Image (cartoon, rainbow, N blue to C red; front, side):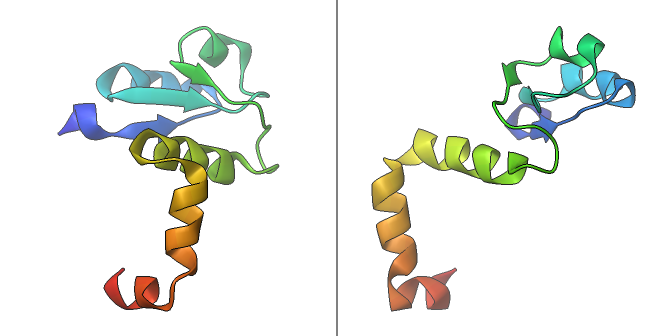
Length: 81
């Protein structure tokens, strides 16, 4: 479902998609027009860890980050996921 989609965009072409998704995110250095329309403006700029920042935000909605990273370090994590 579209409302289950998180979308990251940084240029005007992304404006068409943003209203159609559940949540839209923009890097700190996104085009000014996008910054006015995205739901969340990230702290990082494009190419400077945006994917990591988004992953941390998603994980944090499910559990504390420390717990998520502890689970990911377990050997059985690789087998299940």
